[in-house]
Length: 502
Ligand SMILES: [Zn+2]
Image (cartoon, rainbow, N blue to C red; front, side, top):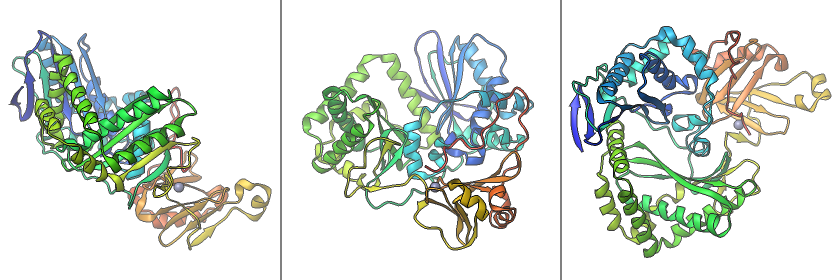
């Protein structure tokens, strides 16, 4: 691998076949947005791609939770023209195309590739950083030209980019990005916990917090954990299709490792129980020497399988580390470290994650948690009682006529709270109010909390004074404008995709 510098952008290159594959990576993704600006990175990516001339080049772009990447494969000069075009477009976004691209984003229902991991991240961070993956946000039509340009200007700069290139490097390649340093990427605070917790989310998964990516012990422990779960849940009992993991490096010394299992319908609780059991046993007794040897063999075999794929994944890793400010280790060095890591180190690394463990079980699965000492964590800030404060209720007659109206809202000293018809209280401390979204008809405001609670403040139900009381408490910067009626032919935007407090 060769490392050079083009226009201030680090370039990782390796010779290869006559065709060139290249990827320009930026250290920005969904984790760098806020609830109000969800999809702004994706919109920047679309605007840049939309600015390029039509071509038969195989090219694409992806906005991920922590990176945004522009790819192309083809003749070197065509790939070079693509990369230069992307840089020029990012430096001066064609925002005159915004309406069009917003429409495309509204129509492009991006599924939820992260649903299981998103739920785990949200259980860790609430509606911030990677936890934003669980929310659709107010919608791209809320993004103004000013917001979009500021986002591009901050993140799509030389200091926050890296290129990897496999095959001939395009001659006279230019990467004319604006100057700028890699911005700070704060890690949002974790919800406090003193021991393992379990929660209801959208899939079966386990999330562990670890130190930096440099220590192979936890990675190896997770490999053994996956293997044990495959043995029990898949091979022995046929309850699951696949077991996967993903490491998200939030900084050089903070990694979130998610293990997710794809359970057969109706078997989610069972698989979650097996996942927890495998993890708890590994924490207690560690892996066997044979299990570690098997993990090392698996890794070595992967490196032998497809030379091109290994080279390209190593290039991609080098670029990823460069934009993430992470130390890069060549894959042979990593394998060498695996070979010298013993069972005790792996056991210690796993035990070190115990007080950060979050087990997730899908809503509705027949499972009531692993039991003591694993506490239940509610997805949002649900609590037992309404706090003190100014209390609003629907009129007495309405309360008598319908159970749905036996609700209450409190505007208190410390926050906003609502009691729903089931008696659950959802509370948002004022400092955790992420956004206040007026509805289209202007008669209600949806208050969205970073603790994943949402409260609908409806003046038809609670009277007009309640919105005024809310205005007194929520800073102007948190209020989003009232949406315009959707233009004809455009899909109507849903105010908040997050399925509100469960
Ligand atoms: Zn709630």
